Length: 238
Image (cartoon, rainbow, N blue to C red):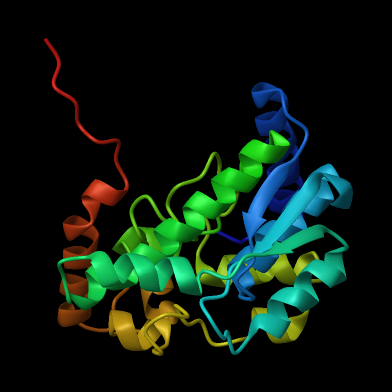
């Protein structure tokens, strides 16, 4: 099925307006990483709500190599922005934790960022908007209660390729859209961490085609192991 970017973008913009109307609020807060996902979400929010009703939050952890990209985005779209450095809080907390496991420590940072976004949202009586795409969500390449914590997410059903198409349509700077995705924590690219390319993953998601049985099994395994990230936590009922 052809991806009709103009029509889809129009529908997303209308949907965003409905989310705010239903929540009886006028604006949104979004974390700006300097990558394509947050850039695309920022562009959608400005299109739907106007720049005066959107706050972009920059949350480096100490020195962030591509922080200028985040600054470029908020300036490009003309939104109010805040910069909150996570370094002191992050170091203080991990120094108190009884673990050296890499993933346990890495996931602390997105959860601190979630806390920051919700504090700013509460101050302004705004909603927090998610920036995770379908490709990441399908394999659980997110932090539970971190970047998966939001009031709504306009790109959760779109692959990385489709997000780029939406961004191009909304005139997001091309260097941002074409930048190699990194988690900004481990020093590795997304594809180095997950073990295959987004192109391969997207082909499987949209066309059910895999280049090998091993790749299919790997994607399915990651999807099944992270099922808990995509579902509401179970509660005991009686």
